[in-house]
Structures are given as structure tokens and as C-alpha cells.
Image (tube, rainbow, N blue to C red; front, side, top):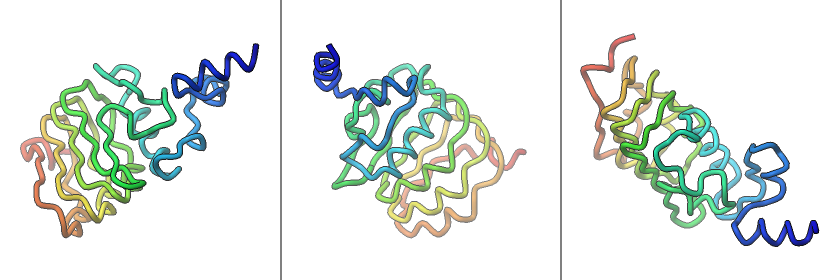
Length: 163
């Protein structure tokens, strides 16, 4: 019986560890991106109320992170994250700063609140950042000025600067 359950789970990209942990995703089963990047995506999912996104196909369901909706990979790193108009609520977690290969981060037209994490300044290859159409507050982190490849930055200036 356990062998049949394991076969069934593997057919759908699920692991018994993910099921047994009570719904918590086990990044140690992921092979397509580094563990730290998987953990950053899981933190993002949890911080932005991923269970209630309009579409969350694949998230925390398969052990192939690159198959999760809005996640694209290049080599062994997450290179693009696009979740526009998808019902994201909550705050942007600082763990996103661990996505070392990220070049494109788009989360516009959602309901994100709080401030922009300074850790996004660690995304040295980031070329595009779109956070417009959210309810972000605070100032633009000075760390973003260190992003030498950043060519496009979309923010709502009328909302930022408020505390």
C-alpha cells in the first residue's frame, strides 16, 4: 500500500515528506534550484498569502520550482518572477534577496503592503523591478542604487515616502 502511495505521489511530483509535514513544503526534495532559493520562494508564497492567490498552479505542490506559476529559471537559478494582478496580499519578504540569479521581478497590480525590503539590493543581476499598483509605504531603499544592471524600475511615487 505504501509503495502504491509513493508511486501515486511521484507521478504528480509530490513527495511523501511534503504531505507528512502537514502541508509545509520540504525544499530538500527540490533539485532544479538551490535550497536557499526554494526557501526564498516558499517564504514569498507564505508572506503574500499564496493559498489565496487567483492562480497558484504548482506552488508547493511539485518539487520542480521552475514549474511553479510565474517562476522561470536559467541554469540552476530562478531568473524571473512574474505575478502581475494575481491577488497577492501581505508584505514582500526579505528572503527574496537570496534569489541570486534574479533578473526580472514583477509583482505589479496586487495588494502588497509594507516597505520594500533592503535585501532586494543584493540582487546584483536585477534588470527590471516592477512593484507599481500596490500599497507599499516607506522610502525606496538606498541599496537599490547599488543595482548596476537595473534598467527599469516601476514604483508608485505617490505612495512611497509615507510611513
